Amino acid sequence: MQHLCTAHANSGLIVFGHLQFNPAGDMEQIEIDMAVNGDLAKDRCWRRHGRLWTASEFKKYLNDIIKEAEIDPELLADVDLGLQLPHEGGLVRQDIQQYAHALMLRRMVPKFDCRFFFVQDGDAGLSKAFLAAFVPEVAAGRVDVATVSFAKYEFNDVREVLYAQGRKELRNNLNLTAQQLDSLPEFVLNEEIGREIVKRLVGHPLGSPFAWPYHTKYKRSRVVDLKTD
Image: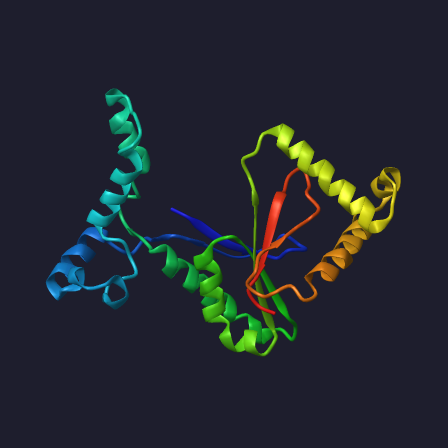
């Protein structure tokens, strides 16, 4: 199951958190209902019960996960047990979870007289859900959406090289020595980085990923994709 949450950037407050699970749903009963009303023969977008997985679809999903894995037969039963859902309830479709999450956030927007910036991880479905839910607000300039992705699995040597490259480019752009850069307070450094990034973003085509030039040790090869202007 996936847990989808939106946090406030400055305070860290979790605004909403949604689990990809409905305790009131029953996937086996839903599959029976779908067989009776002809849902199984339809594309999922036209199904009456398209919100939840069926029991057989979830079983196939699990089989696809473990079919390529070499598992000791003595451990196989425990593996199946570890992948099962709670005995009651149903797994919600991930796209449904994302749209519902976005729509619940939209209820909050009219209560505040300010702009909203939604910065998300690089999940194409998530940004589509937010853009669809916030069409009027995006058109009015009250909501902006961007996705951010970065390399997560790199050797430490590669991390150090990228970090050094990022610091060198930042020193050159700010015309500072290494000692001067290291002595800057974090909030001042962030402001300076922000100004440099704005310069580079001017005229950058919408929908074209922007490579963040200042690598850090924890976020390398960062790519920002602006979904709104």
